[in-house]
Length: 338
Ligand SMILES: C[S@@+](CC[C@H](N)C(=O)[O-])C[C@H]1O[C@@H](n2cnc3c(N)ncnc32)[C@H](O)[C@@H]1O
Image (cartoon, rainbow, N blue to C red; front, side):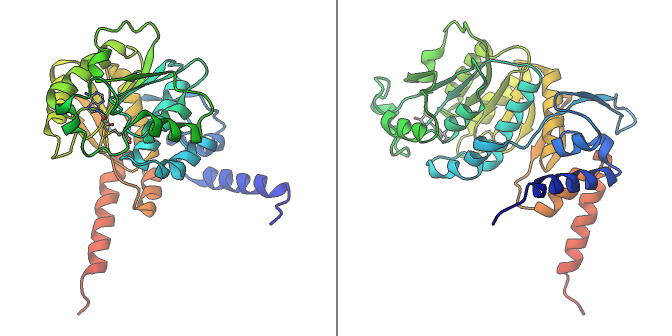
């Protein structure tokens, strides 16, 4: 069907008109559509008034949280064509946090420990800016580190070889990844990180010792300001060592968790962590928690599209009351009629 040149602009002005009529607009500026509605541009810093009596005003950076173009295509469609465990919710979180970093001027490489066939690594490739590289580390079967005991641990990973990974990578990217380290992540210990690293995905070995050592690698590598580290399977009952190592780093290593899905998102920059929690809360359906005085948002799966949009437009102070009302309405609807 041919669309005349006016169709796009009509749709755009309708979206902005709807935005302008909403009373919640001044407080909700993270979405680019909302930002246009109040005349703000991407990258602007806006003051938001306190939502609770004891809160201080916060500064919001206007970020387009909706990944677009090839990145969005990959998140929604291409991602599923690569075997792996990287779900859409986390892919969206990766894109959102990477956008926030770029808006704040945080520049650096992206590191992944635990690549398998490349499902999450390919997304990292889309998130790199100019002069940023992806560094990947995995045993890839052929590694000299893949001793019989390691091979035993890798039994669930069919197709774990460099060729399979490379075939997937090249379906989406023309160039090569910046660097591939074939072997255990311990090969990264003591390395001099001569380029800044801004984003690290730890999804390799899931035992306590390995994760504890990977955290220490991440601490050395990650940029002090605005760095993000993501841990897989922190809540998984089959991998209790992951949570044990990560929460120990929170308790005594200065790590600040700010968002949780099946993965845990954290930073060693407490102020950035607070802004990141805020950005995630505005963009996705979340429940607020506080852990060791830090705001930690629990991200819900996007099954409930109606409540997602309601949630976005509800002032934070009213979210618990709105959720309670929704639950009672649902319960009333389920109750058998007499
Ligand atoms: C869960 S998979 C990674 C999934 C991948 N990130 C994705 O989203 O599809 C875990 C990977 O970690 C690798 N691995 C296990 N122990 C490791 C270690 N000590 N160092 C580096 N990689 C390791 C395995 O070979 C496997 O490919």
